[in-house]
Amino acid sequence: RAAQGFIDSIFSLMNVPLRCPDYSCVSRRAKSVNISFKTPTRGEIAHLVIDSTGLKVFGEGEWKVKKHGQERRRIWRKLHLAVDSKTHEIICADLSLNNVTDSEAFPGLIRQTHRKIRSAAADGAYDTRLCHDELRRKKISALIPPRKGAGYWPGEYADRNRAVANQRMTGSNARWKWTTDYNRRSIAETAMYRVKQLFGGSLTLRDYDGQVAEAMALVRALNKMTKAGMPESVRIA
Image 1 (spheres, rainbow, N blue to C red):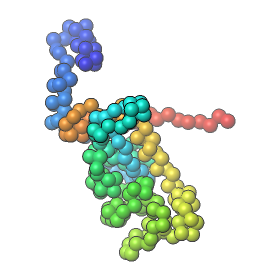
Image 2 (image 1 turned 90 degrees about the vertical axis):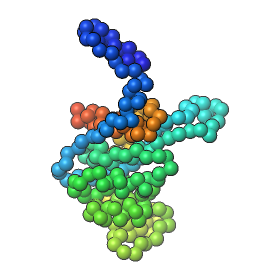
Image 3 (image 1 turned 90 degrees about the horizontal axis):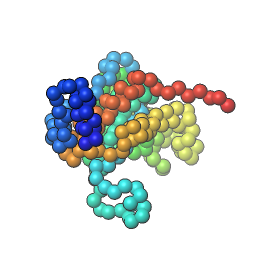
Image 4 (image 1 turned 30 degrees about the horizontal axis):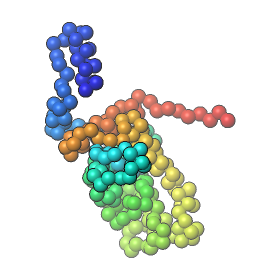
């Protein structure tokens, strides 16, 4: 409503006979708005990193939970992102209910792009046959750490079985992560941090279709900011 008043004042100063739509009008129209973000359709992606985060729809803040405990009515949505580790550009994005697991959302997420991808990195939540089968179908090298004590899978799961063999030899996934440069996956976490710092960690609309449009608008805005330029870090000591 503050933004509405601000825009109305600009119209008034410019002598433009227009009125800014009120919040209720925007909320109703958001249900039918089809917001999509466009990324380059050509060019190889060397390394795609995948992760997800929660966006709050309804619920108490952290301070209230800390002081008085958590109430039952808390509603979240999960934002799934696939990011080009070189350009920091979000290539694929999806919004799901909070009861949808990361591995269940993965196939639909990765199918949004038809560009050639050399490798894709994700955390242990994606260590399922569903995810590995989708990566094999698209001929993408899988960089997904197997769970502790994982066993070999029969069939064409060479990437995963190599990771399992390395885990059994060294006792952990640490060496495998170092040799495969898996730690680039932290760029996906950086993208999640940027979303929450720049736009907040919550969705304002209550209708699910409106929430999808709102989330895609956030992704589109973040990609535009990324294209404008990313900060360059220089070591000084």
